[in-house]
Image (cartoon, rainbow, N blue to C red):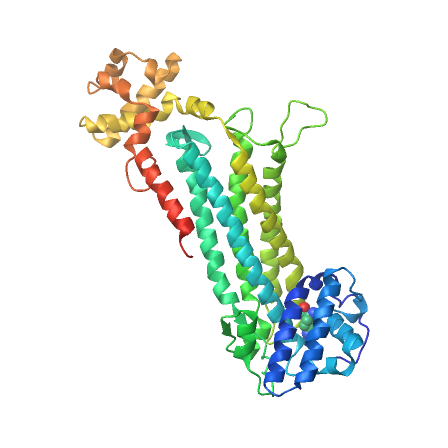
Length: 449
Ligand code: ARG
């Protein structure tokens, strides 16, 4: 322990790193037991340390722990309290350890837990998406490009898009869990420790799959945190796109969904309004999450090896990102699960005959017209209908014939339903394919990552 017993507030981190207390106590317990097993400290001292830590843990959980900012950080606070509780033996806990490998261990333990929570939160939202898609599997809506009506699609097909984005997010988090799952303890300040420690024992006790392979790397890198930030940023981008669609869909202009009361608010002066606040807030919070990713990367850039105090700045942004993502996921699960899907509004919008232009071109292609020519014919036809102020389905067969003799009575069979059914390719929006996709989604939810 440093000789100084009070640090300037600028250096202190205890106001936020105390959040790592459970991990810190668990790591200290494992370390003390290992030191005793290896004969580095006595069994009696180890027992005293462990029972002291146990009562400290209790105090913290009861809100009774006397946190002192002048003691700088969480680690020094707990150690000082341990001295008060068990006396001299407390001084043996920090044998074969430095705060550098200690804090790296704490934050890796913490990160592992939140990755698991994140993966579970993602899965719950995916389940909600699948069940809403399944409950409305026959509903046709307009598919958009440039937010212009493009081609009819199944609503379920559209929703499953988000399922797949989140599936990839879930895979990315599971992937970064493997790289986070490495024990730094035993690296000391940077060079390793001059005691016969058993790192594997500590790793096993704390649930780490591996021990770090390079002591300098173990105390100086935070790339696992950057991965969490990056994955969170991408996940928020996905959620923000869904948020934007819910905002648009719940507008009076679209009216495709009605969001539940818990996810909207009224206006103080305009009683008719149902503002999609929750979706808007999620969209807004995405910016903060992006910011912390850049903050973490910039904090690492240019740091010489090994530990530098800059690394203490890894925590606040990370905690805020974790809080943001872990609160956004369940809110979206609830919002999606409870939204009222207004299928008649979607179907009505999907009935816009101009969206069948591509299908009419494909119709002509099936009758022998080359695609490029067919495309030109239909473009002229659409312009004609527009100038007459009628929809394509209201044109007479004689009107059609002015543009191509290949048109027949069966042109009136071209509809949103036939359009959707025709897209019968793997990954397409045909009902048969979407039913398959829903079953595949169930499998992905059951499968190991
Ligand atoms: N509070 C510090 C942090 O979060 C702990 C490590 C301090 N190490 C040091 N050598 N000053 O990074």
